[in-house]
Amino acid sequence: MGCCGQQRAALAYGGAAGVQRPGEAGAAGGVKVEFTKRKAIVFRGPVTNRRYQFHEGAYVQTVDGRDAASLIKTGAFRLA
Image (tube, rainbow, N blue to C red):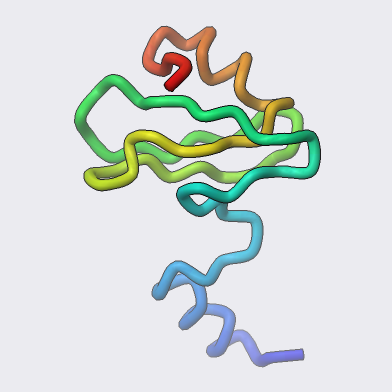
């Protein structure tokens, strides 16, 4: 088990546990969604509690199918 300094370093460099990376599918199968606003956003999936980071170069991502409906309901996402 790492010390808190190592955990802070992992967060700073994108190695945080529970962060959904572009193209990564969840256990329930993946659904490709596109964030239609062109700005950076972090969205927490209400079912999986995963954090999805959308930003330039990663506006289309595969998200866990259990979270996809909630993203789309916001009006800022659509199926890709």
